[in-house]
Image (cartoon, rainbow, N blue to C red; front, side, top):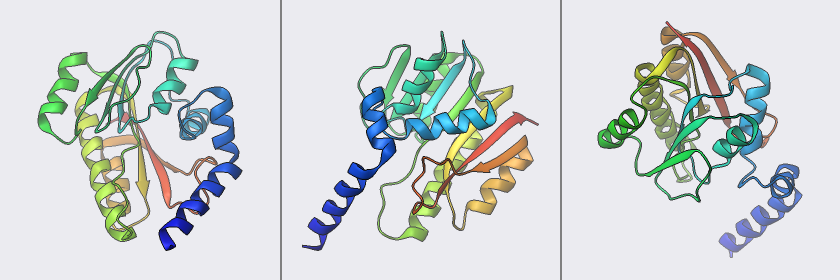
Length: 203
C-alpha cells in the first residue's frame, strides 16, 4: 500500500512538473536536458566541433541537447543501460569504472577531448548518506579520469550530492583545475540534494 502511494505521488509530481511537460514538447528524453542547458548558459561550456564524453548517459538527453544546439560535435556515451541512437554519438554499454571500458574510451578518441560530463549516480537505497558517498566516489573517479583525458582548457561537469564526500570533491577539483564552481540548476527539483561541480582549465 505504501509503495503504491509513493508511485502515485511520483506520477502526480511528474504531471505537474513544467520541465517534464516541456521535454515532451521539445523532444527531449528527460527533463535532465534542461539541467545541462542551464549549466551551459551560466558557464559557457560547449562550442561547435567539440569532442565530448557523456558518462552515465541514459536516456541520452544531455547528449541530445549538445547535438541539437552545436554543429559537428562528436560524443561518446557510456551507461550500464542501452540507449536509443543519437546522431554523432557512439554508445558503450557497460560500467565506466571498469578499466577495460576506460581503455575503450581512450582508444575511440585517441586524443584529448574538450568536455567530460557525468550524470552518474547510484540507484537509491533509501540511505541518503550511503547514496551520497557512493555517488561521490563515482564523481571522484570520473574527475580523475578527466585529468588524463581533457585538453588543458577542458571542462569537467558532474552531479554531486551534499554529504561526506562533498568537501573532498571540491578540494580535489581546486587542486587540479583553475576554476571550480558548484551550481544547482533551476531544473533540479527543490527537494533534491543534487548539485553539479563545474571544473574548468587543468592546472
